[in-house]
Length: 310
Image 1 (cartoon, one colour):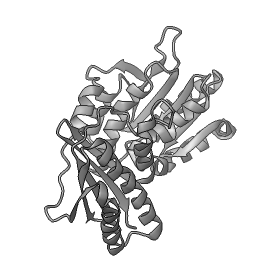
Image 2 (cartoon, rainbow, N blue to C red):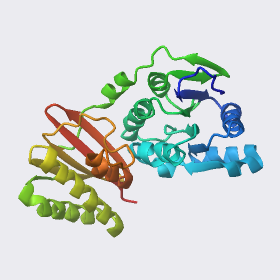
Image 3 (cartoon, rainbow, N blue to C red):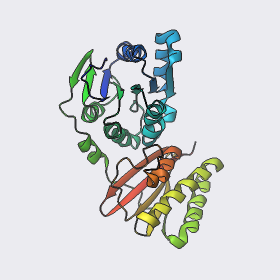
Protein backbone atom coordinates (compact mmCIF):
# COMPACT_ATOMS: atom_id res chain seq x y z
CA UNK A 1 0.00 0.00 0.00
CA UNK A 2 1.73 3.17 -1.22
CA UNK A 3 0.82 6.53 0.26
CA UNK A 4 -0.10 9.16 -2.32
CA UNK A 5 1.54 12.60 -2.08
CA UNK A 6 -1.68 14.09 -0.68
CA UNK A 7 -2.36 11.24 1.75
CA UNK A 8 -2.80 12.09 5.44
CA UNK A 9 0.29 11.88 7.65
CA UNK A 10 -1.09 8.91 9.55
CA UNK A 11 -2.58 5.94 7.70
CA UNK A 12 -4.17 3.05 9.61
CA UNK A 13 -5.69 0.24 7.51
CA UNK A 14 -6.90 -3.18 8.62
CA UNK A 15 -5.82 -6.06 6.37
CA UNK A 16 -8.40 -8.86 6.14
CA UNK A 17 -6.77 -12.14 5.11
CA UNK A 18 -8.19 -15.66 4.91
CA UNK A 19 -5.02 -17.75 4.50
CA UNK A 20 -1.23 -17.56 4.38
CA UNK A 21 -1.22 -16.58 0.71
CA UNK A 22 -3.55 -13.65 1.33
CA UNK A 23 -1.48 -12.60 4.34
CA UNK A 24 1.71 -12.54 2.32
CA UNK A 25 -0.01 -10.80 -0.60
CA UNK A 26 -0.87 -7.93 1.72
CA UNK A 27 2.10 -7.86 4.05
CA UNK A 28 5.08 -8.40 1.73
CA UNK A 29 4.34 -5.52 -0.72
CA UNK A 30 3.61 -3.31 2.29
CA UNK A 31 7.07 -4.08 3.67
CA UNK A 32 8.79 -3.80 0.28
CA UNK A 33 7.21 -0.40 -0.41
CA UNK A 34 8.47 0.82 2.97
CA UNK A 35 12.00 -0.43 2.35
CA UNK A 36 12.03 1.10 -1.13
CA UNK A 37 10.96 4.45 0.32
CA UNK A 38 13.66 4.32 3.00
CA UNK A 39 11.11 4.01 5.80
CA UNK A 40 12.10 2.11 8.96
CA UNK A 41 9.89 -1.01 8.98
CA UNK A 42 8.80 -3.09 11.97
CA UNK A 43 6.54 -6.13 12.09
CA UNK A 44 4.90 -7.10 15.39
CA UNK A 45 2.97 -10.33 14.93
CA UNK A 46 2.69 -13.78 16.53
CA UNK A 47 5.73 -15.92 15.77
CA UNK A 48 4.06 -18.13 13.10
CA UNK A 49 3.42 -15.00 11.00
CA UNK A 50 7.02 -13.89 11.46
CA UNK A 51 8.19 -17.28 10.17
CA UNK A 52 6.12 -16.78 7.02
CA UNK A 53 7.67 -13.37 6.45
CA UNK A 54 11.21 -14.60 7.06
CA UNK A 55 10.75 -17.20 4.33
CA UNK A 56 9.10 -14.75 1.91
CA UNK A 57 11.53 -11.86 2.39
CA UNK A 58 14.78 -13.83 2.37
CA UNK A 59 17.80 -11.59 2.84
CA UNK A 60 15.61 -8.50 2.98
CA UNK A 61 14.30 -9.58 6.38
CA UNK A 62 17.53 -8.27 7.88
CA UNK A 63 16.28 -4.75 7.16
CA UNK A 64 13.04 -5.29 9.07
CA UNK A 65 12.61 -5.23 12.84
CA UNK A 66 10.67 -8.37 13.83
CA UNK A 67 8.81 -8.50 17.16
CA UNK A 68 6.91 -11.47 18.59
CA UNK A 69 3.59 -9.85 19.45
CA UNK A 70 2.52 -12.81 21.61
CA UNK A 71 5.30 -11.77 24.01
CA UNK A 72 5.68 -8.01 23.53
CA UNK A 73 1.92 -7.54 23.26
CA UNK A 74 0.72 -10.08 25.81
CA UNK A 75 -0.84 -7.07 27.56
CA UNK A 76 -2.51 -5.00 24.82
CA UNK A 77 -2.02 -1.92 27.00
CA UNK A 78 1.73 -2.19 26.51
CA UNK A 79 1.69 -2.34 22.68
CA UNK A 80 1.46 1.41 22.09
CA UNK A 81 4.36 2.49 24.34
CA UNK A 82 6.42 -0.68 24.13
CA UNK A 83 6.11 -1.52 20.42
CA UNK A 84 4.48 1.03 18.11
CA UNK A 85 5.51 4.34 19.65
CA UNK A 86 8.86 2.86 20.65
CA UNK A 87 9.60 2.15 16.98
CA UNK A 88 8.32 5.53 15.80
CA UNK A 89 10.21 7.45 18.48
CA UNK A 90 13.44 5.69 17.51
CA UNK A 91 13.11 7.34 14.09
CA UNK A 92 11.72 10.83 14.85
CA UNK A 93 12.80 12.30 11.49
CA UNK A 94 11.44 9.51 9.28
CA UNK A 95 8.09 8.25 8.23
CA UNK A 96 7.76 4.79 9.76
CA UNK A 97 5.90 1.71 8.59
CA UNK A 98 4.61 -0.93 11.01
CA UNK A 99 2.63 -4.14 10.79
CA UNK A 100 0.91 -4.70 14.13
CA UNK A 101 -1.28 -7.76 14.75
CA UNK A 102 -2.73 -7.51 18.28
CA UNK A 103 -5.83 -9.67 17.67
CA UNK A 104 -5.51 -13.38 16.92
CA UNK A 105 -7.52 -16.53 17.54
CA UNK A 106 -6.77 -17.65 21.08
CA UNK A 107 -6.97 -14.26 22.75
CA UNK A 108 -9.08 -14.70 25.90
CA UNK A 109 -12.42 -13.02 26.56
CA UNK A 110 -10.69 -10.85 29.16
CA UNK A 111 -7.96 -9.80 26.72
CA UNK A 112 -10.19 -9.06 23.75
CA UNK A 113 -11.76 -5.75 24.88
CA UNK A 114 -8.28 -4.50 25.74
CA UNK A 115 -7.21 -5.31 22.16
CA UNK A 116 -10.12 -3.31 20.72
CA UNK A 117 -9.31 -0.43 23.05
CA UNK A 118 -5.70 -0.51 21.87
CA UNK A 119 -6.70 -0.45 18.20
CA UNK A 120 -8.99 2.52 18.80
CA UNK A 121 -6.31 4.45 20.70
CA UNK A 122 -3.74 4.03 17.92
CA UNK A 123 -5.67 6.67 15.97
CA UNK A 124 -5.35 9.17 18.79
CA UNK A 125 -1.76 8.34 19.68
CA UNK A 126 -0.52 8.71 16.09
CA UNK A 127 -2.76 11.55 14.92
CA UNK A 128 -0.68 13.83 12.71
CA UNK A 129 2.42 11.62 12.86
CA UNK A 130 4.16 10.37 9.74
CA UNK A 131 3.38 6.67 10.04
CA UNK A 132 1.53 3.85 8.35
CA UNK A 133 0.32 1.03 10.60
CA UNK A 134 -1.21 -2.04 8.96
CA UNK A 135 -3.22 -4.35 11.26
CA UNK A 136 -3.90 -7.87 9.89
CA UNK A 137 -7.08 -9.79 10.81
CA UNK A 138 -7.51 -13.51 10.08
CA UNK A 139 -11.02 -13.78 8.63
CA UNK A 140 -10.93 -17.59 8.68
CA UNK A 141 -10.39 -17.86 12.45
CA UNK A 142 -11.65 -14.65 14.04
CA UNK A 143 -15.28 -14.04 14.94
CA UNK A 144 -17.66 -11.75 13.10
CA UNK A 145 -17.52 -9.53 16.18
CA UNK A 146 -13.75 -9.10 15.80
CA UNK A 147 -14.07 -8.16 12.12
CA UNK A 148 -16.87 -5.70 12.87
CA UNK A 149 -14.75 -4.13 15.60
CA UNK A 150 -11.84 -3.87 13.15
CA UNK A 151 -14.05 -1.80 10.87
CA UNK A 152 -14.93 0.42 13.84
CA UNK A 153 -11.31 1.05 14.83
CA UNK A 154 -9.74 1.38 11.36
CA UNK A 155 -10.60 4.11 8.86
CA UNK A 156 -9.54 1.84 5.97
CA UNK A 157 -10.05 -1.87 5.30
CA UNK A 158 -8.06 -3.88 2.74
CA UNK A 159 -9.76 -7.03 1.51
CA UNK A 160 -9.04 -9.02 -1.62
CA UNK A 161 -6.43 -6.46 -2.68
CA UNK A 162 -8.92 -3.58 -2.58
CA UNK A 163 -8.75 -0.70 -0.09
CA UNK A 164 -12.07 0.76 1.03
CA UNK A 165 -13.10 3.42 3.51
CA UNK A 166 -14.80 1.89 6.53
CA UNK A 167 -18.34 3.21 6.85
CA UNK A 168 -18.50 2.14 10.49
CA UNK A 169 -15.25 3.80 11.58
CA UNK A 170 -15.81 5.30 15.04
CA UNK A 171 -12.95 4.86 17.52
CA UNK A 172 -14.83 6.90 20.14
CA UNK A 173 -17.68 4.38 19.96
CA UNK A 174 -15.21 1.51 20.36
CA UNK A 175 -13.60 3.12 23.41
CA UNK A 176 -16.97 3.68 25.06
CA UNK A 177 -17.98 0.08 24.41
CA UNK A 178 -14.73 -1.21 25.94
CA UNK A 179 -15.14 0.86 29.12
CA UNK A 180 -17.31 -1.86 30.59
CA UNK A 181 -18.08 -3.06 34.10
CA UNK A 182 -15.67 -5.72 35.31
CA UNK A 183 -17.61 -8.46 37.13
CA UNK A 184 -15.81 -10.15 39.99
CA UNK A 185 -16.44 -13.16 42.24
CA UNK A 186 -18.68 -12.27 45.18
CA UNK A 187 -16.22 -13.93 47.57
CA UNK A 188 -13.07 -12.16 46.36
CA UNK A 189 -10.96 -11.28 49.43
CA UNK A 190 -10.97 -7.50 49.99
CA UNK A 191 -8.87 -5.01 51.93
CA UNK A 192 -9.92 -1.37 52.43
CA UNK A 193 -6.91 0.94 52.58
CA UNK A 194 -6.02 4.57 53.19
CA UNK A 195 -2.69 6.38 53.32
CA UNK A 196 -1.58 4.72 56.55
CA UNK A 197 -2.53 1.21 55.37
CA UNK A 198 -0.43 0.84 52.22
CA UNK A 199 2.14 -1.54 53.71
CA UNK A 200 -0.67 -3.68 55.14
CA UNK A 201 -2.41 -3.70 51.75
CA UNK A 202 0.75 -4.96 50.05
CA UNK A 203 1.19 -7.63 52.74
CA UNK A 204 -2.44 -8.71 52.26
CA UNK A 205 -1.88 -9.16 48.53
CA UNK A 206 1.51 -10.83 49.00
CA UNK A 207 0.02 -13.46 51.29
CA UNK A 208 -2.74 -14.35 48.83
CA UNK A 209 -0.30 -14.34 45.88
CA UNK A 210 2.11 -16.72 47.62
CA UNK A 211 -0.75 -19.02 48.59
CA UNK A 212 -1.94 -19.05 44.97
CA UNK A 213 1.50 -20.11 43.73
CA UNK A 214 2.73 -16.88 42.12
CA UNK A 215 6.50 -17.12 41.66
CA UNK A 216 8.80 -15.03 43.84
CA UNK A 217 9.85 -12.90 40.86
CA UNK A 218 6.27 -12.19 39.90
CA UNK A 219 5.42 -11.46 43.54
CA UNK A 220 7.96 -8.64 43.30
CA UNK A 221 6.26 -7.43 40.12
CA UNK A 222 2.87 -7.58 41.84
CA UNK A 223 4.20 -5.55 44.77
CA UNK A 224 5.51 -2.90 42.38
CA UNK A 225 2.19 -2.73 40.52
CA UNK A 226 0.22 -2.45 43.75
CA UNK A 227 2.56 0.23 45.03
CA UNK A 228 1.73 2.36 41.99
CA UNK A 229 -2.01 1.67 41.98
CA UNK A 230 -2.58 2.21 45.69
CA UNK A 231 -0.47 5.39 45.63
CA UNK A 232 -2.61 6.65 42.74
CA UNK A 233 -5.71 5.96 44.83
CA UNK A 234 -4.34 8.06 47.68
CA UNK A 235 -3.20 10.93 45.45
CA UNK A 236 -5.84 10.95 42.69
CA UNK A 237 -8.60 8.60 43.88
CA UNK A 238 -10.07 10.30 46.91
CA UNK A 239 -7.48 9.24 49.48
CA UNK A 240 -8.57 5.63 49.90
CA UNK A 241 -9.51 2.50 47.98
CA UNK A 242 -10.38 -1.18 48.07
CA UNK A 243 -7.93 -3.90 47.07
CA UNK A 244 -9.25 -7.28 45.97
CA UNK A 245 -7.38 -10.39 44.90
CA UNK A 246 -8.49 -13.80 43.64
CA UNK A 247 -7.59 -16.64 41.31
CA UNK A 248 -9.35 -17.13 37.98
CA UNK A 249 -8.22 -20.30 36.25
CA UNK A 250 -4.47 -20.00 35.75
CA UNK A 251 -4.40 -16.29 36.57
CA UNK A 252 -3.98 -14.28 39.73
CA UNK A 253 -6.28 -11.25 39.50
CA UNK A 254 -5.59 -8.13 41.53
CA UNK A 255 -7.98 -5.17 41.52
CA UNK A 256 -7.84 -1.67 42.97
CA UNK A 257 -11.04 0.38 43.16
CA UNK A 258 -11.22 4.03 44.18
CA UNK A 259 -13.19 7.26 43.64
CA UNK A 260 -10.85 8.73 41.02
CA UNK A 261 -11.53 9.20 37.32
CA UNK A 262 -9.10 8.70 34.44
CA UNK A 263 -9.93 11.37 31.88
CA UNK A 264 -6.95 10.70 29.59
CA UNK A 265 -7.49 7.45 27.65
CA UNK A 266 -3.77 7.38 26.75
CA UNK A 267 -2.63 7.46 30.38
CA UNK A 268 -0.05 4.72 30.81
CA UNK A 269 0.24 4.20 27.05
CA UNK A 270 2.79 6.87 26.13
CA UNK A 271 6.53 6.43 26.51
CA UNK A 272 7.72 8.41 29.51
CA UNK A 273 8.14 12.09 28.72
CA UNK A 274 8.68 15.15 30.94
CA UNK A 275 5.37 16.68 29.80
CA UNK A 276 3.40 13.66 31.08
CA UNK A 277 4.96 12.90 34.49
CA UNK A 278 1.74 11.57 36.02
CA UNK A 279 1.44 8.61 33.66
CA UNK A 280 4.76 6.94 34.50
CA UNK A 281 3.24 4.70 37.16
CA UNK A 282 0.52 3.39 34.86
CA UNK A 283 3.12 2.94 32.13
CA UNK A 284 5.04 0.63 34.45
CA UNK A 285 1.85 -1.23 35.39
CA UNK A 286 1.14 -1.91 31.72
CA UNK A 287 4.72 -3.07 31.15
CA UNK A 288 4.74 -5.52 34.07
CA UNK A 289 1.26 -7.09 34.23
CA UNK A 290 0.15 -9.79 31.78
CA UNK A 291 -3.13 -7.92 31.24
CA UNK A 292 -4.59 -4.66 32.54
CA UNK A 293 -8.29 -3.81 32.34
CA UNK A 294 -9.83 -0.54 33.50
CA UNK A 295 -13.36 0.71 34.04
CA UNK A 296 -13.62 4.42 34.78
CA UNK A 297 -16.59 6.75 35.32
CA UNK A 298 -17.18 10.03 37.13
CA UNK A 299 -18.01 7.95 40.22
CA UNK A 300 -14.76 6.02 40.35
CA UNK A 301 -12.18 3.79 38.67
CA UNK A 302 -11.48 0.07 38.86
CA UNK A 303 -8.08 -1.12 37.62
CA UNK A 304 -7.60 -4.88 37.31
CA UNK A 305 -4.25 -6.57 36.71
CA UNK A 306 -3.68 -10.20 35.75
CA UNK A 307 -0.60 -12.31 36.44
CA UNK A 308 -0.11 -15.79 35.01
CA UNK A 309 0.45 -18.50 37.61
CA UNK A 310 2.04 -21.01 35.28
